[in-house]
Structures are given as C-alpha cells and as structure tokens.
Length: 326
Image (cartoon, rainbow, N blue to C red; front, side, top):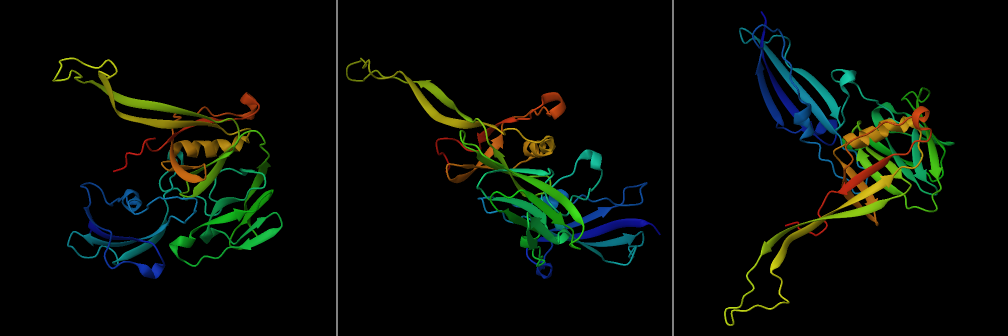
C-alpha cells in the first residue's frame, strides 16, 4: 500500500504545554500528488498569523506552542502508519537565509548575531536568550542562572546588562560549555544625543541598537489644491484678501537620519537584519514610536576597505505628523 492522503490538526497557543486549546487553529487535508510518494506541508505562514508583534519598551517573549497532529491513510483509507503522529514545537517570528537550506535550526542560546553590543555609558541594556538552551549567563563576575517554567512567556528572556559592564558569557544548559562571548562597549557621547532603535531580528527577538552620532530630522509635506469661487452673490465682486486657491488634505511625514558611530565589522550582520525587519521602534523624546527603515540599499563596510566603519540609516516615522487616526 502507498500513502494516499494526510489529515493535520494544527494547534497554536500561548501559555504552558497543558494549555492546548480544544479546537485546532487549522485543519488541513492534502492528497498525494500523482507520481509522488509523500506530502509536504508548509505551516510557517499559518503559525505566523498567531504571532502578534507589539513593543512598548517592555521586552516580552513573543513565542507560541505549535502542535501538529498528523493522521495518514493509504489507498484503502486505512492508517498508513501508526496514527496519529504528534509533534510539538516552539515558534518564534524568525527566519533563515536561502543558503542555510530548508528549516534551518537557529541559535538556541544568545539570540543576537553580533559578538558586540554598544551602549551609552552609565546606561543599562538588554539582550535576548533562548531559555531552553541556556544554563547560565555571566556578566563580568556576576552569574545569573536561567530557569524555564515551560510557559511561552519564558522562552525568550531578556537579560539586563548592568551599566558599564564589559563582557557577557552565555553557557549551555550544562553550565560548562561556553556558547557565546559578547563584548560590551560603553560609549561616551558628550555632543550628540544617542537614539535607541529596537527591532525584531532574525531569531524573532527584540534587539537594541544605538545610533550615537550626528542625527538630522526632515519633514516632507503633502497637500492637494483646488480653486474656489470667491465672488459674492450680492455684489458680484470679491475680496482681494480671500484666497482663490485653497489648500486641503495637508499632512506630513518625518524622516530621521541617524549615524551609528564607529562599530566593529561583525555588526554588519546586525545592520543587515535591521534592514530586513518588518518591526522597528525608536525611543524618541521619552516615548516608544514605530519607524520604518527608509534606506533600502546597504553597502557592506569592512575595516580593510573603509578603515573605520560608520553606517548612516534613514528612518521614517510610521505615522502621519498630523493625527488623522479615525
């Protein structure tokens, strides 16, 4: 007998493993294509509908449990294998690159690509870890043991980097295998105002990146015009102080141009992920505001070619300047 079709109940939820809902998020039925012997299902986009990204400087774990219950049937509609096959995953809103192949396994320890973090001096920071794959984190000489309650709100944890720290070491669950070492640079910037950009990186975690140097702000205004009749009915004349051309639907969008300051070459990966992300925020005048990277072209810089590496990135505020929310 050969495989004829599969039925999949797909459950997606937050909370603990025992909190599986009674009703599946999706029920999928698929038959084998003629001439083939297996069935391939892509569930990532379906699961992504249940990953709602929101950020207000609060660094919450955006993760969900996913459970696929698969029943397979042969040409006689008898079980093709022992039914059901049940697989449970932890899902985050990350991604892999083409050259990494199908379903690449992302890092299960520190959830940042770079080995460097830049923070203003006398300022605490945050960095993300995947709790299932980390036993402890040592920042300078202070050790933090990582615990995982099993709840999805604990899967991605954000470790506080005390002000003026210099080194972070992330260890495997055996507490002895060093998985990643991160150098922390505390930047003194007496002239310019550093801006904190937070974005969702390739691991589905919030990552901070500071832009330390020169910043500039530009406002681009849009409007429409129409010509109105200003002749009065009574005198068949008009007032010269009345405008014949009337402006309407006036609004504006603000763009910020920011500079990183000098950074290490391995920050190229971080800049790349910032360009790829769909979710970015800036800490601006005491508020967390959504922005969109307006720069669409990235020329990678190296110490060999450029000596000192500084990136200039433009960001559009993701809203109109004049409030038109209805």
